[in-house]
Length: 358
Ligand code: COI
Image (cartoon, rainbow, N blue to C red):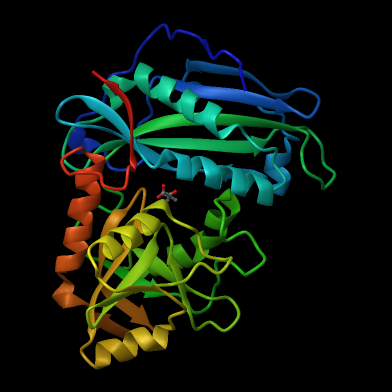
C-alpha cells in the first residue's frame, strides 16, 4: 500500500494522567489512526485524526452480526529515550488471521505497522515512564455497511487508539485467584477461539461476572468438548511449573496464540528449562498439587504481562500455589521480558523494533 497518511491537527490537547493513576484502558491519547474499506476501493483514506467519537449507521453490520476483531500491543520508552515496540509483526500477522476467520478483507501488515509508528511518534509524550507502565496500542476493525442480510460486510473501518496503561490486575505481581469454569465454555475447535474477535470476549463475560462475585479475578477455561483440558484464562495464556518442568496447553485451534506466550516458551528454551506444549487436564494440575509437585502457575499476555496465580478453585476445591507468593521462575520470566521491552536487558531474539530516539 503506497498511500500517504494524512494528518489532521487537533485544536486542543488533553491533560495527561499521572503515571500512578493509570490502571488499564481508562485514558486515550489525543490522536487516532483511521482507515476505511469499501469492496470497490479496497482500504482507503488512511489518516491520523484527533481522537473523537464515531458516527455509524444503526444498520451497520457490526451491531447485528458482530464482525469485529482487535489486537493489543504496547510501546515502551527506555531510559535513554528510545521508543520501541515488542514483536509488533506478530500482532500484525495475527490481525490478518483474525480478518481471515471473520471474512474481513486483509490489511497490508507493513503499512499498518508504519501507520502505528507514525501515530506513536506524534503521541510520544503519551508513553508513560513509571514502573510497569506503557502505551497500549489497540488496533481494531469492524463492519460498517448498513445491511441486515447475513453475509460479510462490504465496508469496514480500521482504527488504532492509544491508551497509557499500568498493570492490568491491580498490583502487577500480586498473585491472582482464578476460578476454573465448568458450566460455561469459551470456544470450540473449529470456532473462533484462536483469533481475536470481540465476540470471544462478549461470550466470556457471564462466567467472569459469576467468578468475580465469588471473589475471583479471572476464569480458567476448560475445553468445550470434555470439560477436562486446560485452555486459557480470560485475558492470558497459562503456564504450570510441575517438578521443574513447565507445561502450557498446546495450541489446538481454540486457544489464542499469544505473543507473550510464544516469548515465554522461547525464553525457557534459551535458559534450558524444560518446557512442553501439550494437552494438560485440570485433574493433572490438581493431582500435581496433591503430590506437592505444582511449584508455580502464571499467566502471560500483552495486557497482563506475566501474572502469577496464587489460587485455583475447581469443583469447590481450592488449592494454594506457592503460598500465594510469586514463584522464582515467574519473577525471572517477568524481569526478563519487561527488561527486554524497556531496553534494560539484551535482546538476543531481536524482538525489539525501535521506532525513534527522543
Ligand atoms: C491483550 O493482552 O492485549 C489483550 O488483548 C487482552 C485484553 C482483552 C485486555
